Image 1 (cartoon, rainbow over the protein chains, first blue to last red):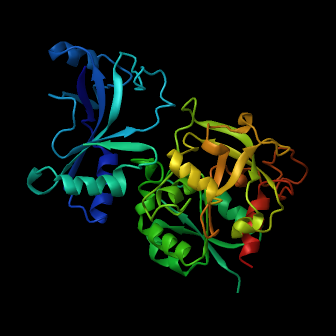
Image 2 (image 1 turned 135 degrees about the vertical axis):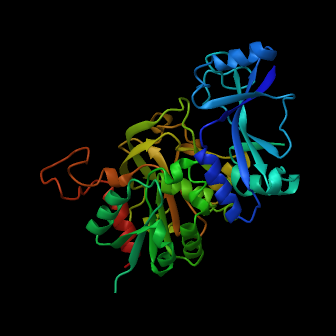
Image 3 (image 1 turned 90 degrees about the vertical axis):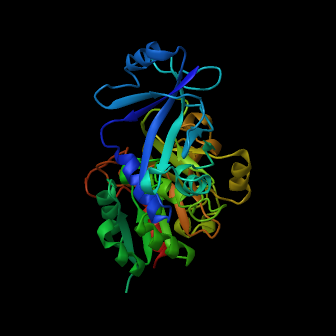
Length: 143
Length: 254
């Protein structure tokens, strides 16, 4: 399974609001990227086409897709995953929700950038997670 | 001079008018306070956080609002013992702010009102809330009888109490479970729970008993025109309606 990140190519108001809130909390975020992580079988251009054809999760007018080299968060990024997938239906044995095209839902990826487009260090990222991005009662953070 | 009640309005709050109207009809001296007037919030004696979608529920329901400047004043007020009452999105904000159940620290939530189960859909359903604590345990419920039944409308997609087993045990042991879902006779069973909420929870109270958060809307079953067994006189408060909880709130301030 390959991990893909589906983000917005239109302005992301949620990411903007999160960045403003984090700055208010004293975390030096210049910019924030938000995307949804999905897991798909396949590889290469066929994988990209498969994601782009999955109309339940991808709208070519709004989204872009990035195939990740590894199924782990990138530098400066955290994946926030639900602890309790009871309401995600239909789902796989792993509890991940399924898209119409067979993709398995991962978490929401938040990638935080500081000055000069440098990604935030682990300590600052952890602070952002603990103070805003993750409610540990219902979510877990994957670094 | 009567106690002054603030109804804070965040960008995206949408139930402030009926909340304000019911507070006034129950005898409360209430006013709306918009986010641009945050600095004035401290002068009020009590706070009612209304339903809606503050900040469009960005990140999570209530998460951004919990860090808003207005909540600085509400948190300070709650810690000084003033009454704070949250309904629906207002309840979600209070959980994200850590004020209820209050088993963690401020703005470090230990529970959430999150996506309904088993179907993750929006629910609009008439429900009954049963008081699950001694009325005197919470200042806002102090004027209610034991085992009081409060009619209300559940109108949410994210009203299911969820927490780790450890924190659920703390909620029970600490007497934080203020209201549970029940049928019209007060019988508590799974069929009365509209959203899969853990413990059948419809409302939580903090340790001190001055902060109450409930998911359903009693203000939408308050006047004869919207009460389930409606009678003549549309603008008259229904005596068996959700106004009983608002009356108790206002009474606690007198």
